Length: 85
Image 1 (tube, rainbow, N blue to C red):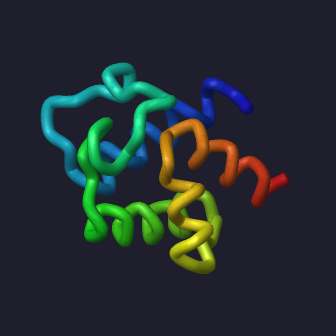
Image 2: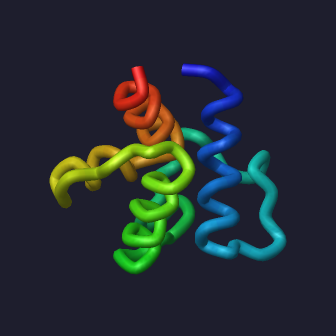
């Protein structure tokens, strides 16, 4: 997957969650999004689902899929690429 897509996903996370004072370069592509890593919660997950649908026309059909997709930025980018491919 392209570094460009990973950067777009990082920027989407920052924009959709209104994360102040953080740049895309500060987000580790492989760090967990929930719990330790970025420390996101279930409300954030819902916002990311909506943002992915808007920006990438990619749907996350259920919670089981979501838990895999939202493991990290890299897993999100991989899922988006797979759905668009």
